[in-house]
Amino acid sequence: MENDIAAGLLISSGGLWHRIFGEAESIAANHTPAVGCRTLDVLHVAAAKLVGVTEFCSFDTRQGDLVKKVGMTAVTP
Image (spheres, one colour):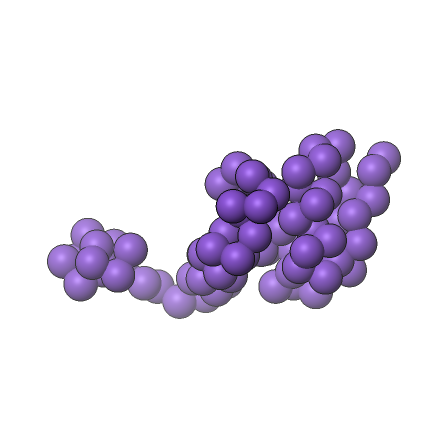
C-alpha cells in the first residue's frame, strides 16, 4: 500500500476508513496466520474494535477466534 500511495495510485483521505485499514493490517499481520480469517472478516473486526465494541456477534468460528485474540468477547447467536 505504501508504494501505491507514493505512486499516487491510492490517496489517503484520513477519516475512519484510513484507521480501519491500518488496524486491519496490524490484526492480519499478528493473527491471520494462526486463525486463517478472510479479508472482510478482518475488516469487520478492525472496524468494531475502533468504534469501541466489546461484544462481537458472528456465526463464523474463525472470526470468533479473531475477535477473542484482539480482546473482544465473541458471541454466537
